[in-house]
View 1 (cartoon, helix red, strand yellow):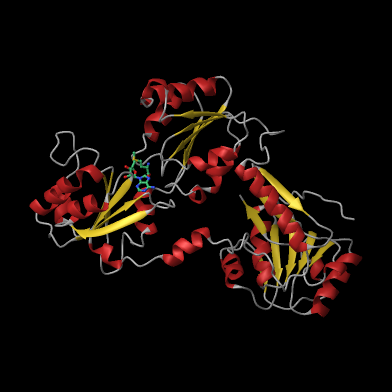
View 2: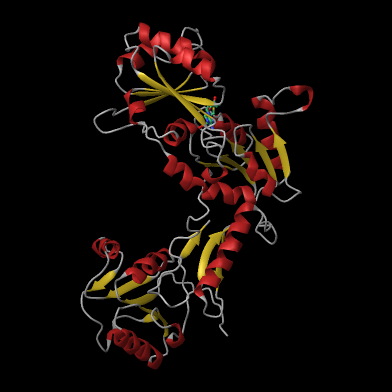
Length: 435
Ligand SMILES: C[S@@+](CC[C@H](N)C(=O)[O-])C[C@H]1O[C@@H](n2cnc3c(N)ncnc32)[C@H](O)[C@@H]1O
């Protein structure tokens, strides 16, 4: 049987013997917990060397020697060398000194095990499964995933959150929201959601979470920005934790600034969680690098929600035409012909490649490529509809068939957690996981 403790390491000394893969994984976690780490090892992995060079750990470049437990007032010892005799000697010295020793090569001879651990819903979760590291990691993943996707109710027993979180939900694939965004979503009392947000995530929320669909209110119109601001403020004033879930990044053509200002003016605490914007995700998902060495050093992201000739347009299309850089235009599918004509009339070549990517990162994603001269006809023939991102510039020619990328996104064989199955590490640690 084991007795699980949460060690508060802040300012306490830890000895790590051995500078290989196991130490490379554990030392950063110890440092993050505030421990002072002393490393004893003739060699060390590059990442550990960097930590030593930057003064974050003390490194003695030599083999372990008797008496090393007296180098500092250690509270804990980790030993993970490739020499079982050294590991045994360190463990024996620690035992004699009544120090807990985590021995990586032999869990049966280890006085302490590190649990498979993870962070979710603002809590640290540790699992020890009777010395079976794979089972521990599997259980840890189930708990962390359950808390993240809401199938375990993260709000039970939690310290209540309040205020408003403006969460950028990414371009649509539910896997492309950030870890922080997903954590906050799992703790929401109210979610105010847009049409382009990853709405499939809402299914996983507990039934009592109020979902306010900003794209749909009675009488068939969308909520005005004022309506949305009012809901955010009113619900937060009722003491509820409100997540404003948007597509892409809230602060790129997302009116996140207005929502943040409305909350601030009402004295409501507000936090912004950045998201993966469609302006970059859509080209990437179609295999188009928006910058490319020797091709494009600049990328211009513009809104084309009004035509270039409109008085309401503040975009300098002439300057964009003069630039050799990449142009990424959002909200412009219906104005594709006007955009292409404007750029050509200001001197950009009709042969300039372009692409339109619709429903980027979603199962319905499709892309067409053309040139400025043929763009409007091609997109119309292909029936391209919003939401779509227009990419203009030589980088379009760099697009690759990204079957690998698409496979990777949905690949059920992709490893669930980094560090799982580290054969050299027999002690039940499966790496830390943050979700
Ligand atoms: C109001 S803007 C919001 C942009 C968002 N804040 C972002 O950072 O992606 C809406 C436009 O984003 C683009 N867009 C959003 N999601 C998209 C997707 N999955 N595929 C293609 N375009 C998308 C389209 O140009 C759409 O008209």
